[in-house]
Length: 110
Ligand SMILES: [Zn+2]
Image (cartoon, rainbow, N blue to C red; front, side):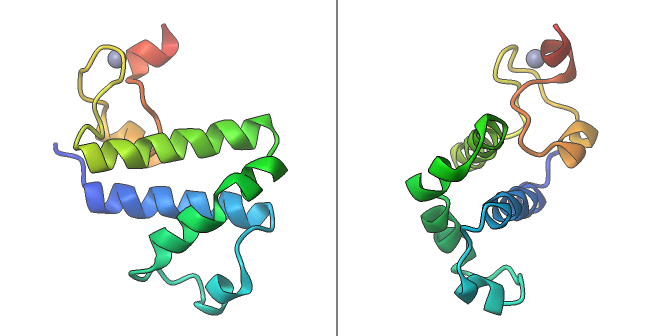
């Protein structure tokens, strides 16, 4: 079953927004949009999730953010859903739960 990249992107952006908001980095303008995903959403999140946000994050938040941004990069590169180590397909069910994962179950456990 192919990965729904549109759905994956939405899930990743939602997570990115949640992390940014948790650290008080999303501006009131975005909140005024009622959390709706619009055309400018990704740009604004990218902007607000810059260095300023990174400074506020703890190590876990930083790692999470890096994983999400890495997944978005893989979406853009067309390699989303492919294990970064063994290059086999990552199970869609795994991606549905953890859209930012870079490794398949075998590699993550190994
Ligand atoms: Zn693997």
